[in-house]
Image (tube, rainbow, N blue to C red):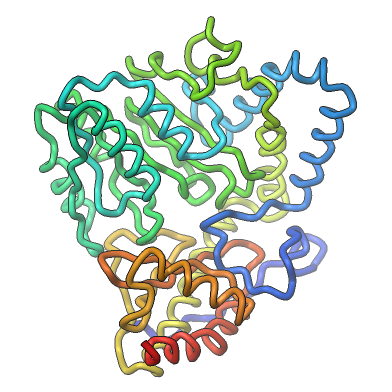
Length: 404
């Protein structure tokens, strides 16, 4: 069972004394508890990107002729935020695009296999299946229990590795199950066998102080989620001998160059989001502090999880607590009443109902046939948001479950 609700965190304020929500442009009539899916861009970064767009459209010719230099500058700024050498980092539209670049660049021998887990993000898994099928191989799924600790996760992943394994794909922070995986330990074990590792770190930037582990392999992370960059901003980090094999998904004028410079040439794509990313990072650092965000988000999620969990327990008589083995700061998982969101399609329907009928944005996920509420927290959230969910959404979700 959940513990009694913890001390109520004080809502975050701007330096001017206003609620932190003033730095964002989110619809005030909605309760926003799903930062983990699509993020939210601070007003300052939106304004910077809009100014860049205006400059681009005032005189497109010099803008696009010199855009690769602007991209290289943005790449260096983003590398600094991620604490990684810019020579190892390329920019891509999102984590899935970075994963696809790795899949499409590596050479898979006939019969090659890819190892991943049952927590893998759907699009990443589908890409792995496409590559393996093309090579006449298959994807091997390590079945990781929700409550597994680091040692068990590493052992179960490595148990699927064999001489045909060409790549291991593992989440740093899982999407559906809101937990961490021991990616450094897996990478070390894989390196002893000469097997490359691709880390799907879609949720890691902003959540982890130093999100890119020190290993030779591939790492992809979204900057639009907890790092709050404009959407369409993600990083692909590659180290080791296979890094130079990476090619962008679209052939452009970067063909004479090698990684990462070959990714800097993006033709007429509008990548002003990359150039405005630093404004988002700096806004949070200068007005609140990234360490403050991480502490606040953890405390707020602890409070929300306890409060909402208690509301579900009182309404159903069942224990909604979930042991995720390796919990992570700004994300929490709460078990939904039996029968709700048992499939991927149903989880979207429940999420849509909560949004349309209750004006609450949240994430509903499914894992092994069980539905879950995935809570998120960011600086603009306050304890009141979770109190509203407990008061308004919990009774309605229990009612829906009873009606099935």
